[in-house]
Image 1 (cartoon, rainbow, N blue to C red):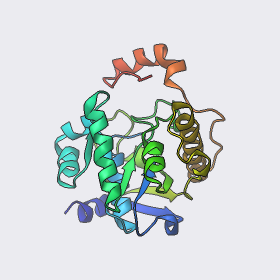
Image 2 (tube, helix red, strand yellow; image 1 turned 45 degrees about the vertical axis):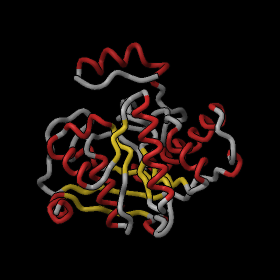
Image 3 (tube, rainbow, N blue to C red; image 1 turned 60 degrees about the vertical axis):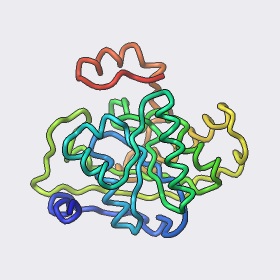
Image 4 (cartoon, rainbow, N blue to C red; image 1 turned 180 degrees about the vertical axis):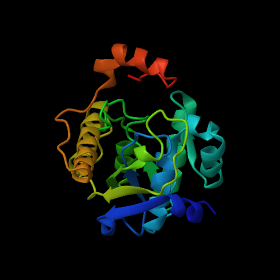
Length: 236
């Protein structure tokens, strides 16, 4: 039901759709700068031939509309920390073992970068890919901010908006095979985030920053600003 209604409000322009694997398990990792991103990328994945499953921030499930969509489509809520977070990773791995795709936002939350470039990533996406020996496919989208700006509260569906989605080549994880120590996972995540930034740069037609925005380096100053806007605290 959601897709016909969504099609009235959003026009997709796909770049390299042939890169989306049509069979087997894999992890799809896009950029993240709007609360409506899961819906945008979920419909995009469906249009590209794969039923999406997400590791989505648990707070998204509290939204009456988006939460209903996420729950009824079998998505996986992710808590910030603790045993529930580990349970979510295990649930995603179960989906993978059944040959399904899972969408994991490696940034973990909306990017804090002032210009909406990807920030430093977390290691969950690469961990699943390395542990299960499955492809890790980067992706990027641009235009979602016209539907719901970062930290926005009100959807703007009309007039109809255009969203560009680009699928990347699978990340070469061969040098990280069997390496699940923190240093290796962090290094692999850097490779992933650089690939996502490069895809976004292609969509935006401008170069990506040489370094990812790092909440640890900018945390104290940025946290105060974000708290005033009613968002989550910056994670380390």
